[in-house]
Length: 293
Image (cartoon, rainbow, N blue to C red):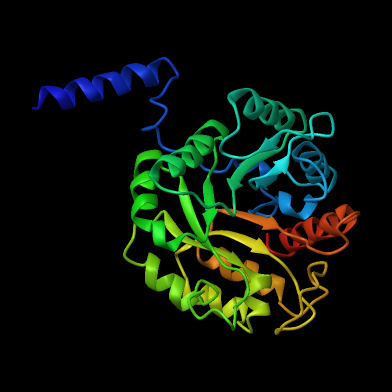
């Protein structure tokens, strides 16, 4: 046997015996079971609270009854230090402050995005942040960087979801709104690369979210879950179960697909006081769990 392989295996076993792991090669931990509601890791997208700081977004997530959060780049850190921004360029000191705040409120950071980067060096900073926070996935629209992203996915064992915003009629080069296009660019990639499905943006693009999920079956990495008053151009978010997107059927489909990623509630309505609505959306999951035991 190759002595290099033996040495590598021996080192891995020794690290495991000590409760340690190589920071880059250790497999990423799944999202903990104890933060799931009805089998789903449902929480907030911090963008829901973008008029506030990261610290306040964590607090509001906990107030709404959720245990997971998807962070995004550029949010101010805290009311006490609004001049500091949180992103993948943050110092270890800032990152530790975020980790301490998460621990204080028993909230787990599971995802980061929507994020872009300029070249492999910056993308590596994104994945380093993911490693430091123990993230499950990263969300991006950078389909042009998939070669770099696939390399880093394999190195860090952190997943990547391709996100979509609404269709841009005046920009035919913007294609990620179409689930068929997303499937075409991820289907031959590592299985840890797939879609970050935004049900509201699909609806705004006149795409049926349930049909889109079925097109991307097996490649859903994460979900930005929204309910809407209609399929079409409406941009108003609604409490789950009060719109037309059939949230229960969407959850049924995700369960059928064996989906294990995070569901981020991205509630882009009533910006200054939307914790009650987010809490009601979390309550929908508790009701769903009761009916699907």
